[in-house]
Image (cartoon, rainbow, N blue to C red; front, side, top):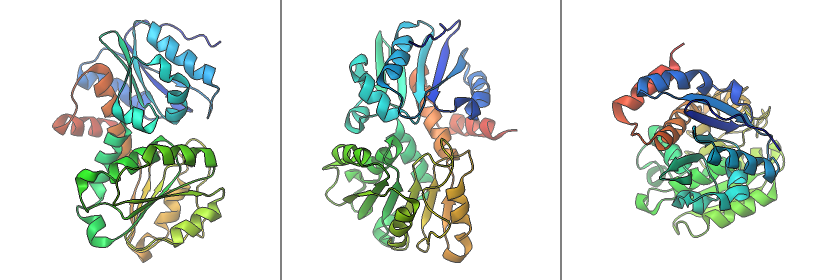
Length: 311
């Protein structure tokens, strides 16, 4: 059993794979100062798809340690939820629907699980997907990867509240079949206007074929973790993007080969390319707001973004 050191002061945790390489380790102390929080940050690294007992050990430690206030969970969102669902006193509707947890917090004696990605991915998409884009342009969505981020984006894009301004088809492609099955269960019956397709694609060449089959004005997302948590890209250098499409690399650090592949065709194809920086900002501030029970938005969000970008 892992031994976690009790916090000596109010502490916020980052549960991931290579947390020490993340910008947040340098950014959080500056954010804490700007927000008036007296709190430290500590990373907890777990291997991809860790054994259930490792996730339960982390949750048990956080629940029982008085000065451990909560955590942001990345990469392990689905696995941690599955392994630890019975350990949460409160689970928010997004977490229940998606079967994932990205935010762990304490309130009123309850240990709480939230899925913040539908909110943070929605805020990010709103910044670069034009209004009426889907109904006027007729594009589709291809999300490569079937983890928590992919499900959250799909849930946001297919909201019935958007009326007819939703993509006609969302394809989720993944190299392992079990994740596709869980994605199908989570997203079933979401919106009758949107056709969901779940494709098993073990190789980058498989994903190249899916990209080539998309119409112009589509959205293609790398939600695999390749380029950050593991080297490589889910597509090859021969990938052929549809014209005028939106390319979203949700990683903000790493080798970002997927993004470089898109940039090589950007001028010729009229592509719009986004990295994961704003997703990083929204993701972190949503969880920090939950853990510390504060509101972050407007001018304060802009200030935190500027702080994060400062050298």
